Length: 89
Image (cartoon, rainbow, N blue to C red; front, side, top):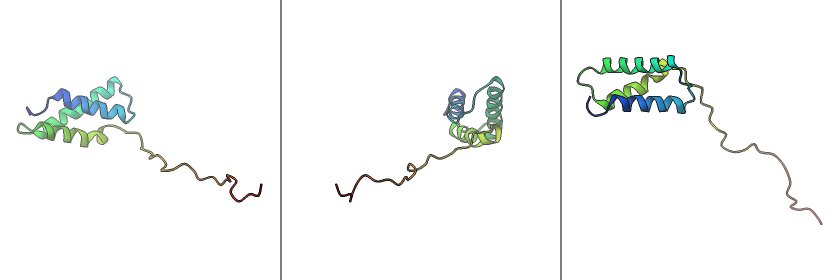
């Protein structure tokens, strides 16, 4: 597991959670550490750092309730109006 440090894995998962809108509390820090620990245990001795990071990121929805993503509207609402074309002045 020399390819990537555990601090990097923690930082990336933490940043992802914060960017997703999860407020980090002491309990959520502990949950994140348990998530990393479980990923290390499943990776075994010969697991690579990139595989560990992939495992942690894939398991985040199992450990955390992420806010629902609402995609932005592609365009503003269409409102009928007139800009004066065709009007006799």
